[in-house]
Length: 276
Image 1: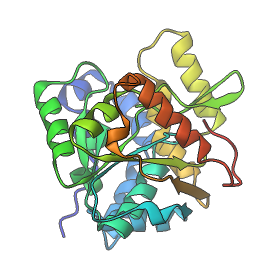
Image 2: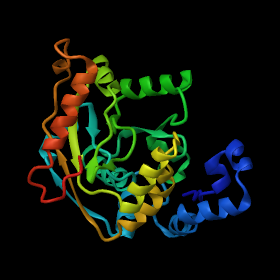
Image 3: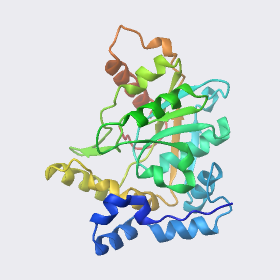
């Protein structure tokens, strides 16, 4: 099997890479753990594809418990809508879960940078985090929802932040409601335990304080993932919500908020700190 290592210049793209000084690139390579990731890719038996999720979790000694697995019917097409507390572990954990229950037949919208991560690139549908979606990106998203793949969505579009001392999920966007109804997919609410470090929360607040549109903390999400070595998580699935539920009695945004509330209720009984 071909082993594509991570090249920072390729990861950043030619335009961005040319603008970044060499010293800053060296720092980025460090906080993105490029050498450690490449060493793992070169040594593992599963350098890419669906098997990568389990071997990566094993390498990091990340374990998890599944609650509500009885709701995951492999005969149906779902939209999985969940909270976004961490940035890295939920992707690996959901990859492992969807391998177990759906033979790895899933797709997830992800930013352009994540879509350059070769080991699991095939599972991502690229979306822009820096501006409006291109027509090609919009078409790709429509094709994803029309396909037989399970669709994994994090409607917040960004990791949870700490606001006034409380871990808070970002507002949910309504698009998954619109698409679930349009393509007649039931929605499975899901919740994952855990949260990022105080350093990440500080960087998020600092980015907002100085008026940056880009959250500096995003640069440290790989580092946050490595900090979660030896951690155990709980992922909880709720009963699927029929797509016919999303009728005209509420706006799509109101329905999105309603599903978000249902996800927050899934925390009950997981014996973990609240993170929504």
